[in-house]
Length: 400
Image (tube, rainbow, N blue to C red; front, side, top):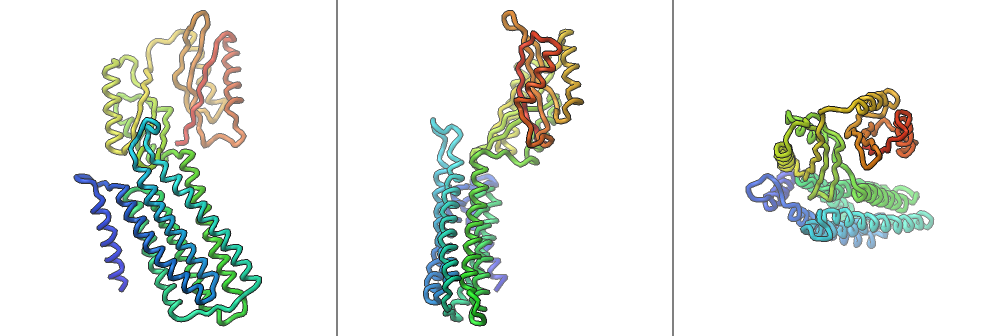
């Protein structure tokens, strides 16, 4: 039986992926995969929800009814997944030049709020049942069906986890986690039903409260994760290291700094990076090299990279050499300074300006660190050297 279950699960999953595969590639159409997952999840959750709701009414069990409503909320969540994939796959337009990928996050946030509302309502009902307990009428058929429900939800969890890995989808990963939490909550309900006849303790109400807590926890966790994505998360640090290493593998690149990566949903990732090259390199050669690197990074990681070229070397004035030596000593004074870039003294009108980028170790900064105070301290050190210099400092944060 277990072998047949595994074979069927693998068959359905591979069938969906084969249908969704983009021709002549090893990639998949995210929208198609999302549609299939959402529609299958909607059908199974509605079926489970209706069955559990009827059993809960017949058995006079608030915990089973709570579990049924949890399935109905999961059905809405699954259908919202379909809508989320549909709208997030819309092409860029004049108002949204980076596409609509973050619609997927907005959809997930709305559903997580709905899930938490359901959790609060059933927590209230469960408390009332604890205060005023009623006898549960549970038959063998109801127990058998709860066991079937656990098996179905376990399959849905594994099914969505595999699909989420195939297309790198946070919403399908969240669906997998939600299904796994349902496996646990339904198991708790089943245990409560079995032992209800052997005690006067208000098992039904207590278990209903536990189920409500898990519904609330799932909704809150999902909302927190989604809000973080909406605010704007960077890429995984190991992935960033890999991208930077590939850039540095070009012998003409002398250094890298000021890199930033933004995710606009799962379909668009944009990165910017400053690279150092020899000041003797021609503009044409530098342009061709950056175009080559940008293409390599996109082909390998599907990251749209914009590279800023910074020439290094050349002849410095005596004044610039003196001030550069002073700035290098700052690393001893401030342990969180990693490096200093774009250093230059230039004249505008009758005034002299000094400009620089100061990169800090983000992981070494305390919670009380204040960027404005730090900039004032740096400006004061420069003023001690030459009080007439106008100062322009850009602070960068490095977490690698």
